[in-house]
Image 1: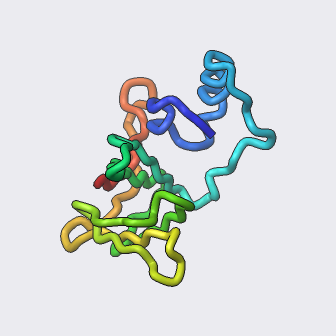
Image 2: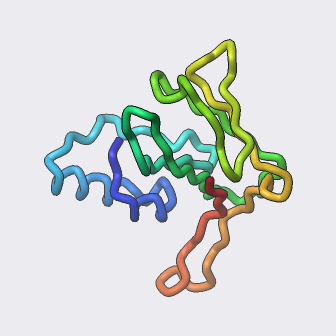
Length: 136
């Protein structure tokens, strides 16, 4: 489901109002039911920077909306066409899984392998909740 970038700064349970407003403004349909946040508190955002015949680059951000810190985190992302020809990641270790050539497995490099928990603000009106994050 397409969302405006600012929606990623809100916990999943608070995004439905923003998603519906964005859909109305852009004449997009909202799926029914709305996709769930899979209840783990972690979300992954891809932002494609370049896309041309020679390949593509993207920025990936992993947000931790939960109360648990993750040491030695990892993630696997399945991409039908985008994973073929995968070359490298910069601040994550990333590799194409040979048996599943549409899946990229990634994990934090040494020193970047800790995904901290969400930090609660002392006053939600002035100091909102902020997710822990890693970016590459």
